[in-house]
Image (cartoon, rainbow, N blue to C red; front, side, top):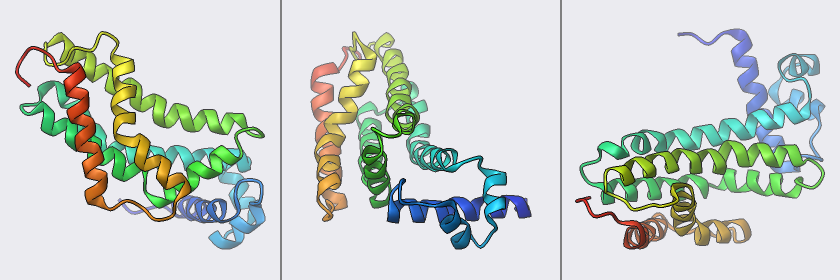
Length: 207
């Protein structure tokens, strides 16, 4: 289906806003600058987004949604997995490679930098990203526990531990060091996270 003129303008505004926010930070970004880069009027920007906070919120939730969708399909099919260890490795590998992408790391820095002045933005980031991910994963871990393929007395805690076994070291480095890990190194963190996770939470039924 062909994109409408209004949809094209909205996408141009979002793309321009993402560029300016990442370059200038939240506080240093103006709607005038976004409008100029998007090649639309400031009135058009306000027609689509009531204020700068709502525009920023839309960007962070869209970026998180895009990242989450990459692992959702595998996650949703976990209860039917014929190779649980392999599927968990796939989820962990996608997690570390998506979350440590440079533009998402930069956006995370912007959100953290503005958290004291704009706590609602930080809450939106957390609710749309980590919290949503934990809850979706916990649901699948609970199902796998019912099947006897995992043993997670507290599925939510198990989900949180799974994520941070894979993500803590590479994300912490990415936040402070511009030199990223290679794909092979990221996969090694992911694979070892799954091995450790299954050692703690593996069930009695065949995986």
